Length: 179
Image (cartoon, rainbow, N blue to C red; front, side, top):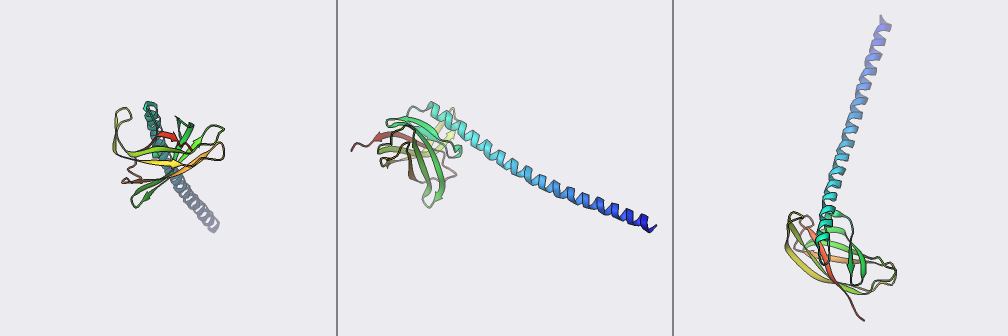
């Protein structure tokens, strides 16, 4: 009788431990699914922004649009050659938004000193029918590069708009500076 009781007790304990282990596995799996869902949401949002950025650039007759959520460079055939451009380090600032504009030369020649017009604001509507709202602009300049291919980092101060509200940055009118 005691042996049978011990066997039942051991089987019951084993089943209890198995049930606890299964609950732990279920919790772990739930957390992993939650993490995957979060990552999928971020990727979906990035894909939408990239699709919008590509559509805007396809329709653009001058300059290049960069959408903060796209996290992908855009190319521009400018007066100083083919350039890749992207936004980096977008953060809040007391007056609005700070970001870094990265411009990469795609030729085997160093980039000359140049100026460019940078516009920023919000986009309302759809990619097919949109309106730029609260647009501001500034002139930026970059020194000549000494290396090729060249990367130029230009700090941007975008007052009057928070990172959450920033819909686009557009770079156009790139002009080489003559010595």
